[in-house]
Image (cartoon, rainbow, N blue to C red):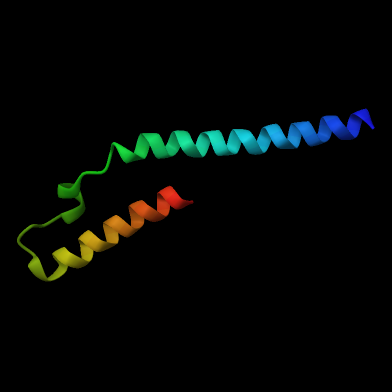
Length: 65
């Protein structure tokens, strides 16, 4: 009975640690986004829009994961 509770507590703490690390990653990444680096070549107007949208969606997906 005690061993089972210890196992459950250990599993809970491991999951809690994963959540904590994800929140830390989110905090680090949210300050690193730069719209100008997302656009790459400003003279390439054909691909500029697609690159910008891709960069934003990539950033959103990395935060959601």
